[in-house]
Image 1: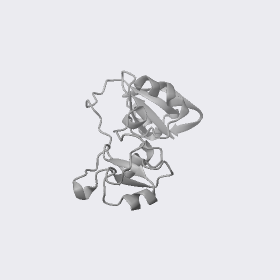
Image 2: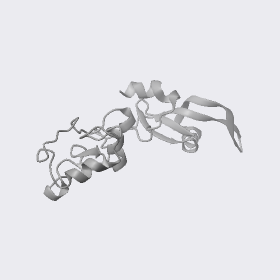
Image 3: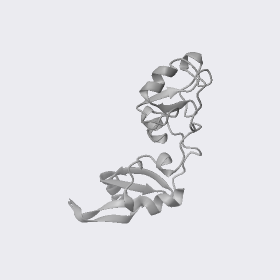
Image 4: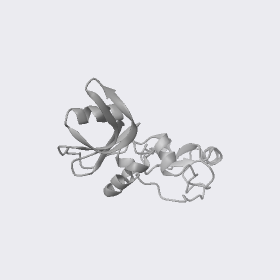
Length: 165
């Protein structure tokens, strides 16, 4: 069971285990906004409901721009597991500007790619192959990328995540 943590201004911050959320509530650093009915957690001083959404009692300052780290899984997810060249199902990633030519591991230089296109393209640029990208690669945006752990969001969180969009 996972719990959505909101800042004091209702900004989504992270998703934590219900145990961590319960510790924050018990230490009076957060209050429960929404809880899972039934299935309580029993402690030495009684039963506690499992929190689904909590809000911090004090505002936590978040650094200006949250940088989403570049990962293979993230690139595939951003591109919807579709090849940027042919549109078929993608299982690999490709550097638009090859690394051997100075291409970096950035969101703007990586795209999802099917195995066939990746092997055919090899160490060349799309221009040299007379290929075009179906979409321009860009850093991912939205609350599911900026709030750690919301890739598999609980339906109860949707109203709170919508506030951040």
